[in-house]
Amino acid sequence: MIHLENVSVTYRLIRERRSTFQAHIINYLKGKRVEIETLRALQGVSLDVSRGESLGIIGHNGAGKSTLLKVISGVIKPVEGTIQVEGRIAPLIELTAGFDPELTGRENIYLNASILGFSRREIDRKCDRIIDFSELQEFIDSPLKNYSSGMVSRLGFSIATEVDPDILIIDEVLAVGDASFKRKSMERIREFRNNGITILFVSHNMEEIGFLCGTVVWLDHGSIKMIGEPGMVIQSYDSQQVGCPL
Amino acid sequence: MRSLKEFTEILRYRELLRNLIERDIKKRYKRSALGFLWVMLDPLLMMLIFYLVFAGLFRNVVGNYIAYVISGIVMWQLFAQGTKVASTAFLQNRNLISKINLPTAIFPVAIVGSSVAHFLFSLIPLFIIILFSGTTPSYYMPLLPVVVILIIVFSIGVSLTISMLTVFFHDVLYIYEVILVGWMYLSAIFYPVSILPRQLQTLMSINPLYHYISLFRACIYDTTLPLMEHLVFGTAFALVSFALGWTIYIRNRDKIIFYI
Image (cartoon, rainbow over all chains, first blue to last red; front, side):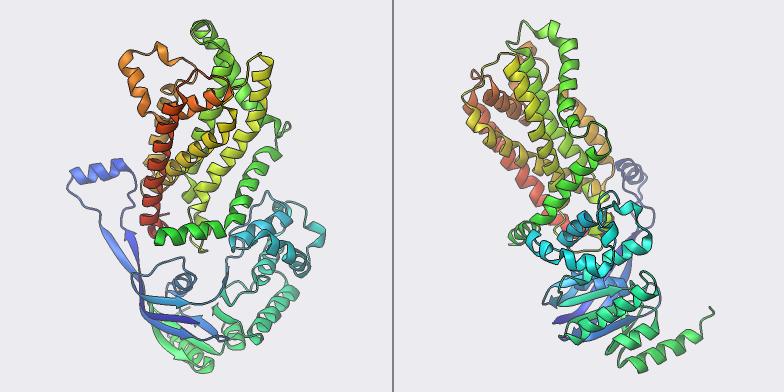
């Protein structure tokens, strides 16, 4: 389903961000060349995820978790290595990135679902289910700027999970809404898992990881440090964290 | 090959294209009291200003000055507004581009699209004025869609080029704004070409906008214009512009995310 072989990603970190002609010319005359430092965000990562597997991804900040998800969803092209992904991906990455505060909830459903590549007919069909799940019937025709942030996240979650994906990518988004909606979202994700949908899940919450995932990958400085059964990986990860002052 | 893949991706996302255009129109006019009327008032007011300032000068040189000016403005706005806003298309949408995999070209193309929507609305006051000023509509009118398609293709090419350059050099934004001002004055919108010195007149043929505006005038009211010549130039410029913009886009598409 997902096959990564020896994938590396480098970011360019320009020491002095120089994106004007003037700066380019002045520095060129001074004989300075742009100093580009590169950051290896992923280094030789090989990974296989089969259909229906739920994979948890853990690691400290900057370990490459989000980069890995972006490579799989195709946002970033790796400098080395090959990727094969089969099936429709639904990214639950920052659910609200595509929202527009001036538009109503309903208009945002259409906008956001089309960002995920849906046709009008498909959205028409799903619209009511999305509204139902979000529990926002009363507000659906008011502009989003009048929503509370919890309501916005609820709408985002409802859209992203109503798309019948083959692969669901979740990046730290379960902290949406109040306790009861949170329970409902967790329930829905579990349902996805039980229906054989592949799940990639990034979280710092080891409890959620343990609860949802069948396999866990521990990323450290862009490479896989450990991969295996959740209990074992989480334990070694936790024991390494103990050394760090918090 | 990659080109083709990207192209089919854009087609697959046509619903998004439509939603982006709709959003732009809704947002721009939702808050103003006169709403959609502004689309029509805008070219009218501009025409009025040009008319008051220049009619005395050019009325005797240009046969139908009102029709001349308003057709020039409407066509110029279609191009200038679209490409100017499109120049920031990738920067404005960095939030989406860096998170979700979609054919990025859709953003500048959508902006050109909403500019086309505005153009279509502004055709209403244009035709009202043409009819009220006693002008006979041109028998080339059926060619109008062809002319509009040509300028759209040209604008998309320019938008892709400028928006991509802007990602790497922010200066391009400001440079392009200055270029647009100069370009407007060089496009014979409110003055007749005949007042220019002979050398400049021949140079006009390398100004793509001059051809599109002339074609538009030919389709609206002025049947004396050399339609064939403008059509050949207009088509050539549209193809070159699109080929250039598309090539630049395809080559740099994957780098955008590291720069925005």
